[in-house]
Amino acid sequence: MAAPNNQLQQVITYQKADLAWLLNSFAFISIANKKFKNFQDSAPSNLGDTVSFDLAPRYNTYNGLVITLQDSVQRVQNLVCSQAANVSTGYTDQQFLFNVRDYMDRFGMSAIKELGSLIESDIAKNVISGVRISDPQNSNFGQLQTSSGPYRFYGDGVTPINSYGQLAQALANFRDYGAAPNDTQGILPMSNVPGIINTGLNQFTLNKNNETQNSWELGRFSDCEWYQSNLLPIHTAGTVGDTAAPGNVLTLVSTNDPTGANITQLTFSGAGTSDVNAIKAGDLLQFNDGVSGKPNLRYRTFIGHVPSSQPVQFRATADAASTGGGQVTISIFPALVSVQNQNQNLNVALQAGMTVTVLPSHRAGVIMSGKPLYMAMPKLPDQSPFDTVSEMDKDSGASLRHYYGVQFGQNVRAYVRDAIWGSTLIPENSMRLIFPM
Figure 1 (cartoon, rainbow, N blue to C red):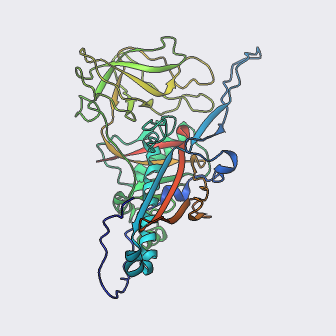
Figure 2 (figure 1 turned 90 degrees about the horizontal axis):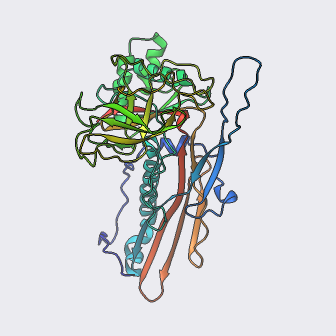
Figure 3 (figure 1 turned 45 degrees about the vertical axis):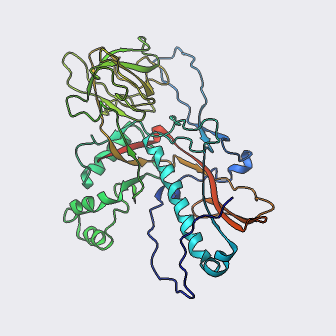
Protein backbone atom coordinates (compact mmCIF):
# COMPACT_ATOMS: atom_id res chain seq x y z
CA MET A 1 0.00 0.00 0.00
CA ALA A 2 1.77 3.14 -1.21
CA ALA A 3 1.57 6.39 0.71
CA PRO A 4 -1.04 8.78 -0.76
CA ASN A 5 -0.07 12.01 -2.45
CA ASN A 6 -1.12 14.27 0.44
CA GLN A 7 -1.15 18.05 0.05
CA LEU A 8 0.04 19.23 3.45
CA GLN A 9 1.21 22.68 4.43
CA GLN A 10 4.99 22.76 4.95
CA VAL A 11 5.11 25.29 7.78
CA ILE A 12 6.88 25.31 11.11
CA THR A 13 3.84 26.49 13.08
CA TYR A 14 0.23 27.20 12.15
CA GLN A 15 -3.04 28.20 13.78
CA LYS A 16 -6.37 26.50 13.11
CA ALA A 17 -8.82 28.88 11.51
CA ASP A 18 -12.10 29.32 13.36
CA LEU A 19 -14.15 28.62 10.24
CA ALA A 20 -17.54 27.00 10.48
CA TRP A 21 -18.03 23.68 8.72
CA LEU A 22 -19.97 23.72 5.45
CA LEU A 23 -22.59 21.30 6.75
CA ASN A 24 -25.50 19.56 5.08
CA SER A 25 -28.89 18.93 6.66
CA PHE A 26 -29.45 15.53 8.23
CA ALA A 27 -33.25 15.48 8.43
CA PHE A 28 -33.68 11.87 7.32
CA ILE A 29 -31.19 10.38 9.78
CA SER A 30 -32.66 12.53 12.54
CA ILE A 31 -36.33 11.58 12.13
CA ALA A 32 -35.97 7.99 10.85
CA ASN A 33 -37.57 5.23 12.90
CA LYS A 34 -34.77 3.68 14.98
CA LYS A 35 -36.72 0.63 16.15
CA PHE A 36 -34.01 -1.57 14.62
CA LYS A 37 -31.00 0.45 15.76
CA ASN A 38 -29.83 -2.74 17.51
CA PHE A 39 -30.00 -4.57 14.19
CA GLN A 40 -26.89 -6.54 15.11
CA ASP A 41 -28.74 -8.18 18.03
CA SER A 42 -31.37 -9.72 15.74
CA ALA A 43 -29.10 -10.55 12.80
CA PRO A 44 -25.42 -11.38 12.29
CA SER A 45 -24.99 -7.73 11.12
CA ASN A 46 -23.28 -8.62 7.89
CA LEU A 47 -23.76 -6.69 4.69
CA GLY A 48 -26.90 -8.03 3.01
CA ASP A 49 -28.61 -9.24 6.19
CA THR A 50 -32.36 -8.68 6.41
CA VAL A 51 -34.88 -8.01 9.16
CA SER A 52 -38.59 -8.35 8.33
CA PHE A 53 -41.27 -6.46 10.24
CA ASP A 54 -45.03 -6.71 9.98
CA LEU A 55 -47.42 -4.31 8.28
CA ALA A 56 -51.10 -4.05 9.16
CA PRO A 57 -53.16 -6.94 7.66
CA ARG A 58 -55.97 -5.99 5.28
CA TYR A 59 -59.52 -7.35 5.10
CA ASN A 60 -62.69 -6.64 3.17
CA THR A 61 -66.26 -6.22 4.46
CA TYR A 62 -69.16 -8.09 2.81
CA ASN A 63 -72.83 -7.14 3.13
CA GLY A 64 -75.34 -9.33 4.94
CA LEU A 65 -75.00 -12.11 7.50
CA VAL A 66 -74.00 -14.87 5.12
CA ILE A 67 -70.28 -15.17 5.73
CA THR A 68 -67.59 -15.11 3.09
CA LEU A 69 -64.38 -16.60 4.45
CA GLN A 70 -61.34 -14.65 3.33
CA ASP A 71 -57.65 -15.26 3.65
CA SER A 72 -55.61 -13.75 6.47
CA VAL A 73 -52.37 -12.51 4.93
CA GLN A 74 -49.39 -11.42 6.98
CA ARG A 75 -47.89 -8.43 5.22
CA VAL A 76 -44.21 -7.73 5.81
CA GLN A 77 -41.62 -5.15 4.86
CA ASN A 78 -37.93 -6.00 4.59
CA LEU A 79 -35.15 -3.85 5.99
CA VAL A 80 -31.95 -4.88 4.24
CA CYS A 81 -28.52 -3.83 5.47
CA SER A 82 -27.36 -3.29 1.91
CA GLN A 83 -25.11 -0.23 1.95
CA ALA A 84 -21.48 0.30 2.93
CA ALA A 85 -19.07 3.20 2.61
CA ASN A 86 -15.80 4.47 4.02
CA VAL A 87 -13.57 7.54 4.09
CA SER A 88 -9.91 6.53 4.42
CA THR A 89 -6.72 8.52 4.74
CA GLY A 90 -3.04 7.63 5.05
CA TYR A 91 0.16 9.37 6.08
CA THR A 92 3.85 8.61 6.39
CA ASP A 93 5.42 8.78 9.83
CA GLN A 94 7.12 12.03 8.90
CA GLN A 95 3.85 13.60 7.77
CA PHE A 96 2.08 12.43 10.89
CA LEU A 97 4.80 13.71 13.21
CA PHE A 98 5.39 17.14 11.68
CA ASN A 99 2.09 18.02 9.97
CA VAL A 100 -0.83 15.85 11.00
CA ARG A 101 -0.67 14.76 14.64
CA ASP A 102 -2.04 18.01 16.06
CA TYR A 103 -4.48 18.36 13.17
CA MET A 104 -6.15 14.93 13.34
CA ASP A 105 -9.31 16.28 14.93
CA ARG A 106 -9.88 18.50 11.87
CA PHE A 107 -9.21 15.74 9.36
CA GLY A 108 -11.33 13.34 11.40
CA MET A 109 -14.32 15.67 11.71
CA SER A 110 -14.25 16.45 8.00
CA ALA A 111 -14.13 12.74 7.14
CA ILE A 112 -17.06 11.92 9.44
CA LYS A 113 -19.20 14.72 8.03
CA GLU A 114 -18.43 13.59 4.48
CA LEU A 115 -19.47 10.03 5.34
CA GLY A 116 -22.56 11.25 7.17
CA SER A 117 -23.67 13.31 4.15
CA LEU A 118 -23.37 10.28 1.89
CA ILE A 119 -25.46 8.17 4.29
CA GLU A 120 -28.10 10.90 4.55
CA SER A 121 -28.39 11.31 0.77
CA ASP A 122 -28.64 7.54 0.35
CA ILE A 123 -31.48 7.26 2.88
CA ALA A 124 -33.24 10.13 1.10
CA LYS A 125 -33.33 8.05 -2.10
CA ASN A 126 -36.17 6.03 -0.57
CA VAL A 127 -38.36 8.96 -1.59
CA ILE A 128 -37.74 8.10 -5.25
CA SER A 129 -38.58 4.41 -4.81
CA GLY A 130 -35.77 2.78 -2.96
CA VAL A 131 -31.99 2.74 -3.04
CA ARG A 132 -29.60 0.72 -5.14
CA ILE A 133 -27.20 -1.60 -3.34
CA SER A 134 -23.93 0.29 -3.47
CA ASP A 135 -21.32 -2.18 -2.24
CA PRO A 136 -19.52 -3.88 -5.17
CA GLN A 137 -18.87 -6.96 -3.03
CA ASN A 138 -22.59 -7.55 -2.51
CA SER A 139 -24.06 -10.22 -4.81
CA ASN A 140 -27.01 -7.90 -5.51
CA PHE A 141 -24.83 -4.90 -6.37
CA GLY A 142 -26.79 -2.26 -8.29
CA GLN A 143 -30.17 -3.84 -7.57
CA LEU A 144 -33.00 -1.35 -6.89
CA GLN A 145 -35.05 -2.11 -3.78
CA THR A 146 -38.40 -1.29 -5.35
CA SER A 147 -40.58 -2.30 -2.38
CA SER A 148 -39.61 0.98 -0.72
CA GLY A 149 -40.94 4.45 -1.37
CA PRO A 150 -44.18 6.26 -2.22
CA TYR A 151 -46.37 5.64 -5.25
CA ARG A 152 -48.68 8.59 -4.60
CA PHE A 153 -47.58 12.15 -5.20
CA TYR A 154 -48.55 15.80 -5.16
CA GLY A 155 -47.43 18.19 -7.88
CA ASP A 156 -47.08 17.84 -11.63
CA GLY A 157 -43.40 18.65 -12.07
CA VAL A 158 -44.26 21.84 -13.95
CA THR A 159 -46.12 24.04 -11.46
CA PRO A 160 -43.96 25.02 -8.45
CA ILE A 161 -45.02 24.12 -4.92
CA ASN A 162 -44.53 27.49 -3.28
CA SER A 163 -47.40 28.21 -0.87
CA TYR A 164 -48.96 27.14 2.40
CA GLY A 165 -52.15 26.43 0.47
CA GLN A 166 -50.42 23.83 -1.68
CA LEU A 167 -48.90 22.16 1.37
CA ALA A 168 -52.35 22.04 2.97
CA GLN A 169 -53.78 20.48 -0.19
CA ALA A 170 -50.97 17.92 -0.32
CA LEU A 171 -51.71 16.94 3.27
CA ALA A 172 -55.44 16.73 2.53
CA ASN A 173 -54.78 14.41 -0.43
CA PHE A 174 -52.42 12.33 1.70
CA ARG A 175 -55.00 11.90 4.46
CA ASP A 176 -58.00 11.39 2.19
CA TYR A 177 -56.54 8.08 1.01
CA GLY A 178 -55.93 7.07 4.61
CA ALA A 179 -52.98 7.95 6.80
CA ALA A 180 -51.63 7.25 10.26
CA PRO A 181 -52.93 10.01 12.56
CA ASN A 182 -49.65 10.41 14.43
CA ASP A 183 -46.15 11.67 13.64
CA THR A 184 -46.92 13.37 10.33
CA GLN A 185 -43.70 14.80 8.93
CA GLY A 186 -42.70 16.52 5.71
CA ILE A 187 -39.31 17.29 4.19
CA LEU A 188 -38.95 20.07 1.62
CA PRO A 189 -36.06 21.28 -0.55
CA MET A 190 -34.22 23.95 1.42
CA SER A 191 -34.22 26.39 -1.49
CA ASN A 192 -38.04 26.28 -1.77
CA VAL A 193 -38.82 27.07 1.86
CA PRO A 194 -38.40 30.89 1.74
CA GLY A 195 -40.94 31.20 -1.09
CA ILE A 196 -43.49 29.15 0.85
CA ILE A 197 -42.92 31.22 3.99
CA ASN A 198 -43.34 34.43 2.02
CA THR A 199 -46.79 33.44 0.76
CA GLY A 200 -47.94 32.84 4.34
CA LEU A 201 -47.01 36.26 5.71
CA ASN A 202 -49.93 38.63 6.25
CA GLN A 203 -52.40 35.81 5.65
CA PHE A 204 -52.74 34.59 9.23
CA THR A 205 -53.17 36.06 12.69
CA LEU A 206 -50.81 38.65 14.11
CA ASN A 207 -49.16 36.22 16.50
CA LYS A 208 -48.68 33.70 13.72
CA ASN A 209 -47.04 36.35 11.55
CA ASN A 210 -44.72 37.40 14.34
CA GLU A 211 -43.69 33.83 15.01
CA THR A 212 -43.07 33.11 11.33
CA GLN A 213 -41.17 36.31 10.65
CA ASN A 214 -38.96 35.79 13.67
CA SER A 215 -38.03 32.19 12.85
CA TRP A 216 -38.33 32.14 9.05
CA GLU A 217 -39.06 28.43 9.33
CA LEU A 218 -42.15 26.40 8.58
CA GLY A 219 -42.06 24.45 11.83
CA ARG A 220 -45.45 22.88 12.53
CA PHE A 221 -48.26 23.54 10.05
CA SER A 222 -51.53 21.65 9.55
CA ASP A 223 -50.61 19.02 12.16
CA CYS A 224 -47.37 18.24 10.32
CA GLU A 225 -43.79 18.87 11.38
CA TRP A 226 -41.91 20.34 8.43
CA TYR A 227 -38.19 19.92 7.85
CA GLN A 228 -35.87 21.10 5.11
CA SER A 229 -32.99 19.43 3.34
CA ASN A 230 -30.36 20.24 0.75
CA LEU A 231 -29.84 16.53 0.03
CA LEU A 232 -33.23 15.60 -1.42
CA PRO A 233 -32.94 13.24 -4.40
CA ILE A 234 -33.56 14.02 -8.06
CA HIS A 235 -35.53 11.58 -10.19
CA THR A 236 -34.54 11.54 -13.86
CA ALA A 237 -37.57 10.51 -15.88
CA GLY A 238 -37.66 8.56 -19.10
CA THR A 239 -38.20 10.09 -22.52
CA VAL A 240 -41.99 10.04 -22.25
CA GLY A 241 -42.03 11.92 -18.96
CA ASP A 242 -39.58 14.55 -20.17
CA THR A 243 -41.48 15.16 -23.40
CA ALA A 244 -43.62 18.29 -23.36
CA ALA A 245 -47.38 17.78 -23.14
CA PRO A 246 -49.27 16.22 -24.82
CA GLY A 247 -46.33 13.95 -25.69
CA ASN A 248 -46.20 12.70 -22.10
CA VAL A 249 -49.69 11.16 -22.35
CA LEU A 250 -50.07 7.41 -22.97
CA THR A 251 -53.19 5.43 -23.90
CA LEU A 252 -54.00 2.14 -22.20
CA VAL A 253 -54.08 -0.87 -24.55
CA SER A 254 -54.24 -3.87 -22.21
CA THR A 255 -53.28 -5.30 -18.80
CA ASN A 256 -51.64 -8.52 -17.69
CA ASP A 257 -54.84 -9.55 -15.84
CA PRO A 258 -58.15 -8.90 -17.62
CA THR A 259 -60.04 -10.11 -14.53
CA GLY A 260 -58.81 -7.11 -12.56
CA ALA A 261 -57.70 -9.25 -9.61
CA ASN A 262 -53.98 -8.40 -9.67
CA ILE A 263 -52.83 -6.00 -12.38
CA THR A 264 -49.06 -5.57 -12.20
CA GLN A 265 -48.31 -4.66 -15.83
CA LEU A 266 -49.93 -2.14 -18.14
CA THR A 267 -49.36 -1.83 -21.89
CA PHE A 268 -49.75 1.62 -23.44
CA SER A 269 -49.50 3.16 -26.88
CA GLY A 270 -48.04 6.55 -27.75
CA ALA A 271 -44.55 6.06 -26.30
CA GLY A 272 -42.55 6.83 -29.43
CA THR A 273 -40.89 4.21 -31.57
CA SER A 274 -38.03 1.94 -30.47
CA ASP A 275 -37.01 4.11 -27.53
CA VAL A 276 -34.89 2.21 -24.97
CA ASN A 277 -35.34 5.05 -22.46
CA ALA A 278 -39.11 5.46 -22.79
CA ILE A 279 -39.84 4.73 -19.11
CA LYS A 280 -37.38 4.67 -16.20
CA ALA A 281 -37.74 2.87 -12.89
CA GLY A 282 -39.30 5.27 -10.40
CA ASP A 283 -41.31 7.19 -13.01
CA LEU A 284 -44.68 8.37 -11.68
CA LEU A 285 -47.92 8.12 -13.66
CA GLN A 286 -51.52 9.23 -13.08
CA PHE A 287 -54.75 8.24 -14.83
CA ASN A 288 -56.41 11.26 -16.41
CA ASP A 289 -59.95 12.52 -15.88
CA GLY A 290 -62.30 13.58 -18.65
CA VAL A 291 -61.43 10.94 -21.26
CA SER A 292 -64.38 10.70 -23.64
CA GLY A 293 -66.54 7.67 -22.94
CA LYS A 294 -64.46 6.54 -19.97
CA PRO A 295 -65.22 6.87 -16.24
CA ASN A 296 -62.86 8.77 -13.98
CA LEU A 297 -60.67 6.43 -11.95
CA ARG A 298 -60.42 6.95 -8.20
CA TYR A 299 -58.49 5.17 -5.48
CA ARG A 300 -60.47 3.47 -2.77
CA THR A 301 -59.33 4.20 0.76
CA PHE A 302 -56.57 1.90 1.95
CA ILE A 303 -58.71 0.75 4.90
CA GLY A 304 -62.45 0.38 4.31
CA HIS A 305 -62.23 0.30 0.48
CA VAL A 306 -64.53 3.31 0.09
CA PRO A 307 -64.05 5.42 -3.08
CA SER A 308 -61.99 8.49 -2.24
CA SER A 309 -61.52 11.69 -4.23
CA GLN A 310 -57.93 10.76 -5.10
CA PRO A 311 -56.89 9.99 -8.69
CA VAL A 312 -55.16 6.68 -9.34
CA GLN A 313 -51.39 7.17 -9.25
CA PHE A 314 -48.65 4.57 -9.48
CA ARG A 315 -44.96 4.19 -10.24
CA ALA A 316 -42.89 2.14 -12.64
CA THR A 317 -40.74 -0.48 -10.95
CA ALA A 318 -38.39 -1.13 -13.87
CA ASP A 319 -37.04 0.52 -17.00
CA ALA A 320 -39.20 -0.11 -20.07
CA ALA A 321 -38.41 0.35 -23.77
CA SER A 322 -40.99 1.08 -26.44
CA THR A 323 -41.54 -1.14 -29.47
CA GLY A 324 -41.28 -0.20 -33.10
CA GLY A 325 -45.04 0.40 -32.98
CA GLY A 326 -44.78 2.83 -30.08
CA GLN A 327 -46.14 0.53 -27.38
CA VAL A 328 -44.55 0.16 -23.94
CA THR A 329 -45.30 -2.39 -21.21
CA ILE A 330 -44.73 -1.00 -17.74
CA SER A 331 -44.34 -3.02 -14.54
CA ILE A 332 -46.12 -1.07 -11.81
CA PHE A 333 -46.53 -0.67 -8.05
CA PRO A 334 -48.95 -1.06 -6.38
CA ALA A 335 -50.96 -3.77 -8.07
CA LEU A 336 -54.27 -2.35 -9.30
CA VAL A 337 -57.33 -4.35 -8.23
CA SER A 338 -60.94 -3.73 -9.23
CA VAL A 339 -62.56 -6.96 -7.94
CA GLN A 340 -63.83 -7.08 -4.38
CA ASN A 341 -61.16 -8.44 -2.07
CA GLN A 342 -58.83 -7.20 0.67
CA ASN A 343 -56.57 -5.46 -1.88
CA GLN A 344 -59.30 -3.74 -3.92
CA ASN A 345 -58.18 -0.19 -4.66
CA LEU A 346 -60.03 0.90 -7.85
CA ASN A 347 -63.56 2.30 -8.00
CA VAL A 348 -64.11 0.88 -11.52
CA ALA A 349 -62.34 -1.61 -13.76
CA LEU A 350 -59.61 -0.43 -16.11
CA GLN A 351 -60.67 0.02 -19.73
CA ALA A 352 -58.68 0.25 -22.93
CA GLY A 353 -58.58 3.85 -24.08
CA MET A 354 -58.02 5.35 -20.65
CA THR A 355 -55.00 7.64 -20.58
CA VAL A 356 -52.19 8.43 -18.16
CA THR A 357 -49.77 11.33 -17.80
CA VAL A 358 -46.12 10.59 -17.03
CA LEU A 359 -44.36 13.08 -14.75
CA PRO A 360 -41.12 14.78 -15.86
CA SER A 361 -37.79 14.78 -14.03
CA HIS A 362 -38.04 16.46 -10.64
CA ARG A 363 -36.60 16.96 -7.19
CA ALA A 364 -38.54 14.93 -4.63
CA GLY A 365 -39.71 15.95 -1.18
CA VAL A 366 -41.88 13.75 1.00
CA ILE A 367 -44.82 13.59 3.41
CA MET A 368 -45.06 10.59 5.72
CA SER A 369 -46.88 9.57 8.90
CA GLY A 370 -46.61 6.87 11.54
CA LYS A 371 -42.77 6.86 11.50
CA PRO A 372 -42.59 4.71 8.32
CA LEU A 373 -38.96 5.49 7.41
CA TYR A 374 -36.90 2.72 9.01
CA MET A 375 -33.13 2.91 9.32
CA ALA A 376 -30.60 0.46 10.72
CA MET A 377 -26.88 1.08 11.21
CA PRO A 378 -25.38 -1.98 12.92
CA LYS A 379 -22.41 -1.50 15.18
CA LEU A 380 -19.43 -2.95 13.35
CA PRO A 381 -16.97 -5.26 15.13
CA ASP A 382 -13.46 -4.32 16.15
CA GLN A 383 -10.79 -4.60 13.45
CA SER A 384 -8.31 -6.51 15.60
CA PRO A 385 -5.33 -6.10 15.85
CA PHE A 386 -5.88 -2.47 14.83
CA ASP A 387 -7.07 0.12 17.35
CA THR A 388 -10.83 0.48 16.85
CA VAL A 389 -13.53 2.82 18.11
CA SER A 390 -17.16 2.07 17.23
CA GLU A 391 -19.88 4.24 18.73
CA MET A 392 -23.62 4.70 18.23
CA ASP A 393 -24.98 8.22 18.61
CA LYS A 394 -27.88 8.02 21.06
CA ASP A 395 -29.80 10.84 19.36
CA SER A 396 -29.48 10.00 15.66
CA GLY A 397 -28.99 6.24 15.92
CA ALA A 398 -26.02 6.46 13.59
CA SER A 399 -23.14 4.06 14.25
CA LEU A 400 -19.72 4.76 12.76
CA ARG A 401 -16.47 2.86 13.15
CA HIS A 402 -12.97 4.34 13.20
CA TYR A 403 -9.91 2.14 13.09
CA TYR A 404 -6.29 2.90 12.42
CA GLY A 405 -2.96 1.13 12.22
CA VAL A 406 0.43 0.86 10.57
CA GLN A 407 1.42 -1.43 7.72
CA PHE A 408 4.58 -3.15 8.94
CA GLY A 409 7.74 -1.85 7.30
CA GLN A 410 5.93 0.34 4.74
CA ASN A 411 5.90 3.71 6.56
CA VAL A 412 2.15 4.09 6.02
CA ARG A 413 -0.33 5.00 8.76
CA ALA A 414 -3.94 4.35 7.67
CA TYR A 415 -7.04 5.93 9.24
CA VAL A 416 -10.44 4.54 8.24
CA ARG A 417 -13.98 5.69 9.05
CA ASP A 418 -16.72 3.37 7.80
CA ALA A 419 -20.29 2.23 8.29
CA ILE A 420 -22.90 -0.18 6.98
CA TRP A 421 -26.58 0.67 6.96
CA GLY A 422 -29.99 -0.04 5.49
CA SER A 423 -33.24 1.88 5.15
CA THR A 424 -36.75 1.46 3.81
CA LEU A 425 -39.86 3.65 3.52
CA ILE A 426 -43.31 2.03 3.73
CA PRO A 427 -45.13 2.99 0.50
CA GLU A 428 -48.70 3.44 1.73
CA ASN A 429 -47.57 5.68 4.60
CA SER A 430 -45.78 8.18 2.39
CA MET A 431 -46.32 10.53 -0.54
CA ARG A 432 -43.80 12.17 -2.86
CA LEU A 433 -43.81 15.97 -3.23
CA ILE A 434 -42.87 16.99 -6.77
CA PHE A 435 -40.68 20.06 -7.23
CA PRO A 436 -39.83 21.16 -10.79
CA MET A 437 -36.16 21.08 -11.78
